[in-house]
Image (tube, rainbow over all chains, first blue to last red; front, side, top):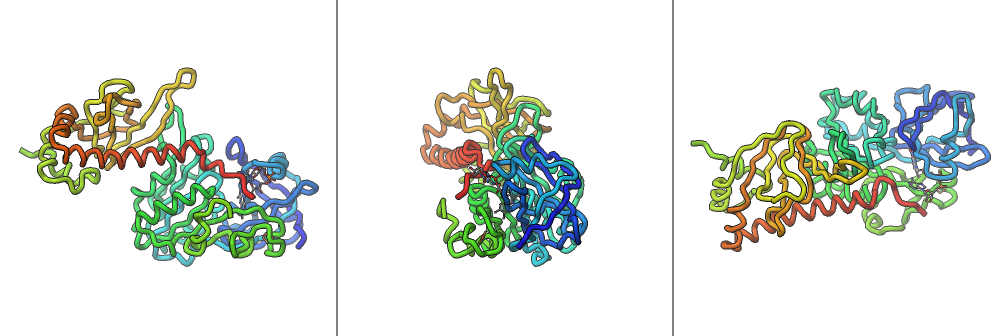
Length: 270
Length: 155
Ligand SMILES: Cc1cc2nc3c(=O)[nH]c(=O)nc-3n(C[C@H](O)[C@H](O)[C@H](O)COP(=O)(O)OP(=O)(O)OC[C@H]3O[C@@H](n4cnc5c(N)ncnc54)[C@H](O)[C@@H]3O)c2cc1C
Ligand code: FES
């Protein structure tokens, strides 16, 4: 499957090491996607990486990706400017069960760049807000400077129908918000564990402890969904690069129900 | 006269504590309020109290020369603050500063320490409850130290 060429319409610097690209196709339309799905982004001559879609699924014109610079491809991607071109294949993978969660409380627990794949889920929930119970966002990052989508978080905070809790690992004296890892927010967050669907995304160690706390609080493991990351090559279930036990993350994931992952989840490296 | 007893009884930290111990705590309890920015306690000073928070938020802080004040953890409603009163040398390990108007019940530890020494059942109850708090804080600190949002290099 060949990448389609897209132009960069805008670059938003989110934090010192993350940026959002607004892309538009050079030919044709942007294909529809479901929250939680990803694209393979190809920097010509450098390489290809899987990046989740971070924009609004109802906006068919703009394709958004929010990326953290960690290595060779993302480093070059960060230098992209308005008008530059890159290749896009996708969308691929499974999605968050947002529309299947109507009638439930929804807890979105994420850490670091993990907020990016969950932003489309939040947009989708907000578009159908009256069909959900409580909606709670629990978001943890390293420091106040690492908080993604700051302006949007402020806006969501001002809404009465969303409960937003942000916490950081470390802060200096002028920070007025919470300090402590995201798992410390779970015991007190306002949701009914019996009727809650939890969507969790972040580094694996964060997800492990988050799931532990959610279960302690009484959330059924069949109502907990995680998005897994594995290195990918083909993105379409052919090469085996993204194998996770019996699954291929690109095809069977990245979003999995926790009870499906549980047998493997305790193991550090699978 | 109304006492703080019903509030103590219902606080999650003291749930299930025998009525005679709640009675004892009530005798050592005082309603306190801290304005935003006010310190509840200072690092290195004698720890002769602990606090049961009823509203507001407190940050635990330490001062690092050359770097300034570092916030380590925030504690809020329905949580308990301070175990230094129970463990030698009975000195606060951090500063505690109110981030917003904070309402709390302060428990005078001097008489409680003596009571714990006399009545080991009471001492054990407290040790167990505060050990839970310490373990939770230790686990949280462990996760902070491993810098978990950074993500691990993957295969
Ligand atoms: C389904 C899926 C969705 C993803 N969605 C996003 C997203 O929305 N935004 C985003 O920024 N990333 C996302 N990622 C991760 C992203 O694909 C990787 O960060 C990227 O492939 C790294 O490529 P690179 O060439 O820049 O780094 P490499 O040169 O491959 O790696 C450089 C070094 O960084 C380490 N490393 C690689 N990835 C990470 C990481 N995520 N965290 C910490 N260290 C890492 C490597 O182990 C290596 O040591 C997703 C991954 C998957 C599988
Ligand atoms: S990336 Fe090739 S099988 Fe998943």
